Length: 106
Length: 250
Image (tube, rainbow over all chains, first blue to last red; front, side):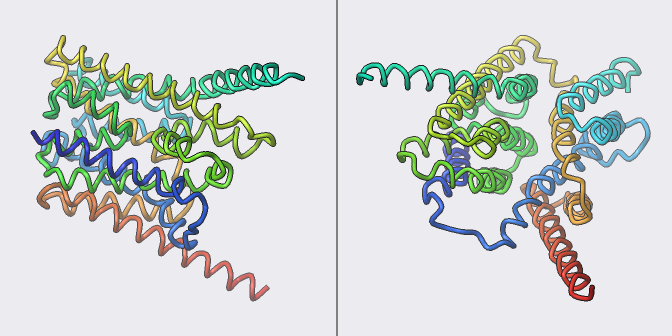
């Protein structure tokens, strides 16, 4: 039953954010500090999701060298710094993770 | 030239714009294929019904927000928290719209509603070149429509495919495919890391996310993100002031 609330709610906030400026069509201008702040939204939100997902993959802190989530995350970050290509990062990161999980049984 | 000739002419221009729009989005669509499939396979184990997963892709149509919603659902977060998080995650679309509005503000309202619904990272990346770099944008909204339809169709299709795969192989959840979301986000964050304020935002956000891990309803995520954004903005403003002062001294 939560889905009947969740999906319309998510639709509403997503569409409102996307529609806001298209609707008023340039009649509103943002102060420059707000535009600057918006630049930080995607990396800040995504990092707040990534870090716990890598350090607590099973719900408990797992800060050791045999944590495949953590190792593969570091590997993917290095690949991304090197190639700066999303698809390459996803594919090599997943392959590395699979290798650790099923090749080495971590 | 007769009226029908003009009509046919513009129709072929529109068709070409739509095809060009779809073609320009193709590389980004290839990247979205595994994303959509994995979203579909993870939906069930996260507590979303197959129909709910499909409805989310059809109506919400926001990849990263949908993934985050799955993570929050799996962690037992309350619905208002998931909706509020969706809002924060999608705030970046305001930036995209701000870039496009000067070029599309004159279009009929129904066009702008359609464009708003289809505004994704991928379509913005594909259409911004067409709108912002090319001179003649009289028919560029058809380019946008082509890009958006290709992206949307693919997203819904891949979600369905993922749901089917998840039903066929129920033990897929033990494979640790949730890492696909982390790796995708890592690939999205790293290109941002080009300035000190950006590094500051990310480091503070990650640290606060760990410090607030015990907060109920995963509220730590929003606290961490807001602290990160505040840090980034403060550093940005400080650096700007410092540069202005140095320029004044010279």
